Amino acid sequence: MSQSRTENFVLDTVTIPADGSMSDAFYIEGLFLLGFVMPSGWNAADMSVQASMDVGIPSNWLNVFDTVGNEWVATTAASRFCLLRTDRPWLGGMRWLKLRSGVTGSPVNQDADRIITVICGYPNA
Image 1 (cartoon, one colour):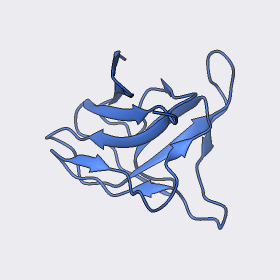
Image 2 (cartoon, one colour):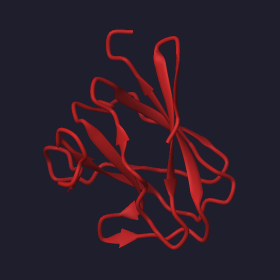
Image 3 (spheres, one colour):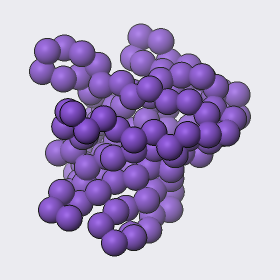
Image 4 (cartoon, one colour):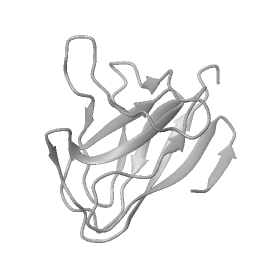
């Protein structure tokens, strides 16, 4: 995982490994998730997430749902910048996130390692 700050944004990369559906963890405390840059070889699937509030190395992961019981899902596709919708709150308020190819009940394994660029922002920027 690499990380760089450009003005008020943090760019990070995560990898969903070949034959897997879950990315490595990335630290998001104090930031809001704004969008993703999807790789060209992406196997068609929406994106869902798991979150952890663990201090230090995360080990307790929870699927993310809203207050009415809907799983948080972003529509994604290959070779796209996927901006999260601005008519509902962006993901924030947690320490760690993992990206999932697919949803909780139907994960989608990727054929090869997929590197996803994650765009986060500072809330007071």
